[in-house]
Structures are given as C-alpha cells and as structure tokens.
Figure 1: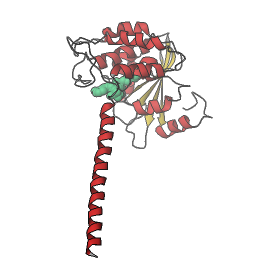
Figure 2: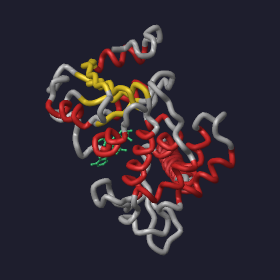
Figure 3: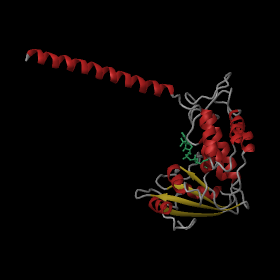
Figure 4: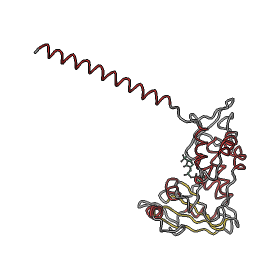
Length: 275
Ligand code: DVN
C-alpha cells in the first residue's frame, strides 16, 4: 500500500511542477505579446481618425498632407509658445463649410451635446467636423530642438495660454464661429450657476464672432435636470444677450436632459422639433 501512496504523491508533485511551468510559459507569452504591441503613435492615431471620418470625403493622401500641415504648428517649439495663429495654415487647408441653421455650439455640456448630435443628421458641433473629430480627446506637444510629437508631460489647459492643445481649440473654435450662419444654436448647462461663463471658449471666442446679418439668431438650449439651479432668467444669460452683435435675435429654451435623450432615441421626432 505504502509504495502505492508514495507513487501517488510523486505523481502529484510532477503534475504540480508541470502546471507551474505551463503557467509561467503562458504568462511569458501574454507579456511578450502585450509589450510587443506598441501603442500606436500620435501620427498613426491622427491618420486613422482622419481616414475614418466620412471616408467618401477624405482621400488617402489627404490625411498624410493634413498631418504635415498640423504638426508644423507646434513641432520643434517650446510648448508654451504656440499661439493660436500657428494653426492658421491648418484652417486654410480645411476650411469649414457654411452650415446655416445646423450649427450647435456648447459650453460645459460636452457629453450631453454630443449624445444629442451623434446621429449627425440634425445639428453639427465642432467635434462633428473633420478637425474637431480627429483631435477631440487627444493631447500633444513638441519640444525645442526635437522633431517629435509628445503625448505626455505636455502643458495642461491652464498651465500656459499658448499651449498646442488650447491654441488648437481656440483657433478651430474661432473658424467654426466665423462659419456660423442663419439660426445658430448653443447648448448650455442649466445645472451650474453661470451657464454663460466669460472665460469659456464659447464666450471669449465664439460669441464674439457671431456677426449680423450672417448670423440671424442665437437659440440657447439650457439643459435642465431635476436639480437644476438656473433657468433662462439667469444673470449670465442676460450678459450673453448684451454681448450679441446688434441685429441678432436671442431665444432661450429650458429643455430637460430626459427630453434630449428622448429626441435622440425617437427617430419619429423630426430635426428641430425637440424643443
Ligand atoms: O462651442 C464649443 C465648441 O465649439 C468648442 O470648440 O468650444 C466650445 C466649448 O468650449 P467652452 O465654452 O470652453 O466649454 P468648456 O466645457 O468649458 O470646455 C470645452 C472643452 O475645452 C473641455 O471639454 C475641455 O476639453 P476636454 O478636456 O473635455 O477634452 C477643454 N477645457 C476647457 N477648459 C478647460 C479644459 N480642459 C482642461 N482644463 C480647463 N480649464
């Protein structure tokens, strides 16, 4: 009996060693595969997002050319010395099409506005355009004496005004506002005390570029929730009205987030009939 017992124990020990060895081999393989797959470079991400944008409108080599125009704005420069004008050649290369009545601006409402416009067949935000969609959510910068694009240790939004990301959004926002025409919409946040914040891009850059008679009206959609603290009588919205170019008609509508969600999901509600 004993020798049988010893045999079983020896077999268990051998099986245990084999299982550990197998585990080590599998772990090594997974680690090798993971480390071997380098994260795509910023350029590769840029090109892929550019090509993915409405493929019928963007051709293969357009994206390569666009990359060259884009990177010249910041590569080799101090990342706190990239003014918004550095992106002028990029705007010239991809001018915004006039989209009268469809343009939707926003402020402090990024998630809800893009949830609402993601169908793309009604309103158009900057992030639904080629440049806005390619660069949305990305971080980049250059460095003096280097031809590389960095995506880490870049200055944050507030670290310095003339950083590559903030200057890009300021420049494309200005161009997007310059292309606004007809009845313009703006989705603002009814859950904050100052829906029209003077330091925001919408206030400091975009509203200032709405010029009558190119822009006929500004329709504010104030997104409300159960805990909303503001409504269309809010003081900052009165400031917005004062800022508007003479001749532009101002409207404000309080619309619940639930209603916006209903309009997004219910295809029978026609465009512009949500509020
Ligand atoms: O009309 C829109 C749109 O056209 C856009 O181009 O500008 C308008 C929105 O800008 P906004 O009025 O300044 O609104 P927000 O919500 O204050 O800021 C918009 C975005 O700018 C934020 O979503 C931030 O981008 P992110 O981080 O979500 O990719 C960025 N931003 C603004 N202030 C920032 C900041 N990021 C970090 N720190 C800050 N202080």
